[in-house]
Image (cartoon, rainbow, N blue to C red; front, side):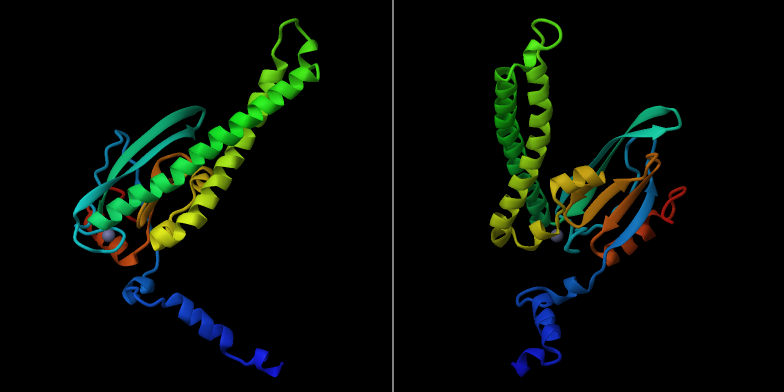
Length: 234
Ligand SMILES: [Zn+2]
């Protein structure tokens, strides 16, 4: 009985958990760092990235595209902002970025179509049976409208649940890379875009972009490379 309260035990467990065997301990020391850069009006990025992987710091072997497309409100009008960045990656992180994207996207779309589709039919058919279409104008389609609305909400929830389940199932295969990637649903809610080691989030009026580097060392190199740009890193 008394043993349970032995001091220091939870701390010991935590340390073990953080330093899993076989992992590069240097990696765990890095903290994320956010750098704010202006979004150029013409959409093309003048940003210079270090010549190494934004995720693990290995030499650059590939590039992953970070796409920022957003409709923002500037004063009275809506403006479409669009920017494309080529984030340097090593072969391994580029591959894992693609795999992680598919591992989230495929179950999300499946869940959306499956749950949304079934809900649409059930609700629309049920409402039609219940006589919803007999109200209002003749030949109106209240049941279809209701079915589509409920189906869409259920589909989004379904997509989210499918993605969560797929993530739990795939975690042992993908490991760290998948664990660190935000859920698609969360990305939609949070307005951010993600590649391994780097995520981008435009501010409210779409003039600046917040780039969050998982590796603060790379973030500092990025800042040093881009200080020459007008209005660049703060
Ligand atoms: Zn890498």
